[in-house]
Image 1 (cartoon, rainbow, N blue to C red):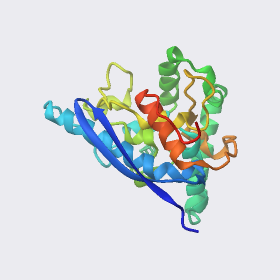
Image 2 (cartoon, rainbow, N blue to C red):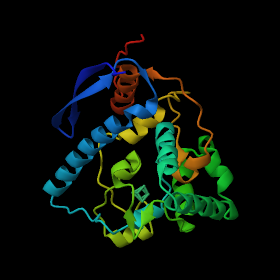
Image 3 (cartoon, protein in one colour):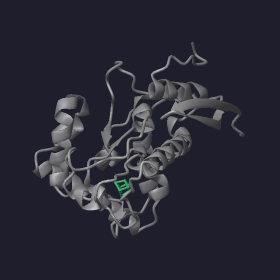
Amino acid sequence: MEIPMQTANVTLRVGGKRVAFGFDVPTIPVEPVALLPLFRSITDTLVDIAAEETRARGLSISCRKGCGACCRQLVPISEMEATAIRRLVASLPEPRRSTVVERFERGVARLREAGLLETLRHPESVDAEKAEQVGLDYFAQGVACPFLEDESCSIHPERPLACREYLVTSPASNCTHPSSNRVQCVPVPAKPSRAVRRIGDERAPDFEPWIPMILALDWPVAERSPQNGTTMVARAFAHLTGADIPTPDR
Ligand code: SF4
């Protein structure tokens, strides 16, 4: 069945620039994960603008293919991304699938030994004050992302939104000791990764759900009923901009 689509035209003011997006959105209920390609593309556009502005200020971006220094950090993902990662791993041919699953399992075992697993299983217990320490404790375990191969991302086109938003201007070597005062990130003015994490889990206005990517394969992701595509995109933009955007269901 062909999915009926509607073109959405959105203009955002990003860092003093007006950025126009035009994209097709399903007008019928779809699985949230069906919208992930759209959110990846919006993220890439916003990150490209931020990178361009950074270069215009005379700074250069240190991130290069083959530098996976940041890929030992805790990567927060959304429910729809956890679903996408599960499906991606399940679709890998053998023996690659078993290799990747084993990397996930080894990483989880390491975090369990370090006493971090319970905290990671309960992100709602990690408030803003604790978040940086949890990130540093995670990094200290040296758990490489299961998709990191030869210090490069083996799922680059499908990497999480948080990975897409991470670019630095500080020396790459600083990312091997990632405290906030050593790593200078390119400021992305609006982060779709955070807006998308709110979709489908809008428990409280100040609650920002996240799932540690290393736990994606066995995270108890609730089966979400298909939702109206236009409504989900409108909610994502509402979280992204803080604006009150009317949705078709209200
Ligand atoms: S998904 Fe790719 S970019 Fe993200 S942490 Fe893993 S290897 Fe690095």
